Image (cartoon, rainbow, N blue to C red):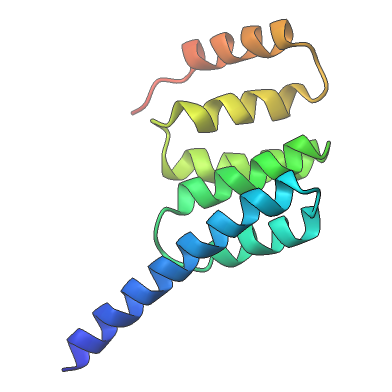
Length: 118
């Protein structure tokens, strides 16, 4: 009985996390940045898909010009899932700040060549 209740709680937290993440995107598109950030941060409290929640929050900061904050979340994300190219792309863009696309592309190529998973 206890195990069944625990698994139901984990399932509910997972679905709640997913709902918060889904709510954040339209709020961001509508210019409701604070609500989007709050939803992404709430999604982080669930144990599932931490890398993507961190990535989403990092990207939100990147889009708003808060590069240092973006890098902080994106680095945490890449530590969890170093195989996801979207996370690496977002990290590269945040590290380049407002630089041109060509600069970002060069930085990502250099990063990819220097990163060798162990």
